[in-house]
Length: 219
Image: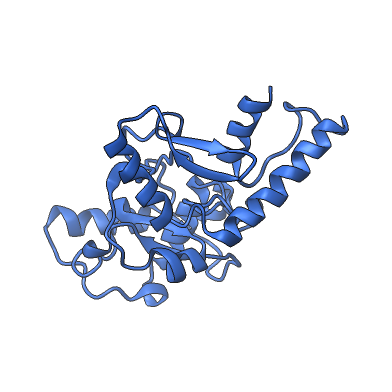
């Protein structure tokens, strides 16, 4: 799970609305999901900064052509019925009641991860990927032969426990994700071994963090 920079705002109509709510200390009202006029703008801005990937598992959620900057007009995403996978996740579910449209609390994630794994579980910001101090290289390790992430084993045990707990809660090692990751990375490495591609030329459009860590271990 790589760091996510949420400072690039293309959906400015939404962000101005959200900023006004925050500046005036207003309750956001009941979360109305796709019924809200800003829903598509939030989703597509997140997909843009997440490169079309699930924020936690890095599985692909949409075609990259859908999230180029030219798809926004006057601060709104022009196509109001884009085809994408996934759901909006409130990272900290306790904020959903009064701060339902808080930009800093949103990520776009795989639907099964949202409904079957993360849900309303209590979270720890240690693995919130948009925080200033988030760094996957210092927090995580990848075991290539098992295709799973674990906490960096050089960290203090207490930090490792917190990280490993969040790896579970975010679905990063959810069995179907691990299987997809295994198949994807095995195929890419096979192309390199057969000299169809090399480490620098091969295109990686899913699971970039896992692939990068495997590359370091294989080179």
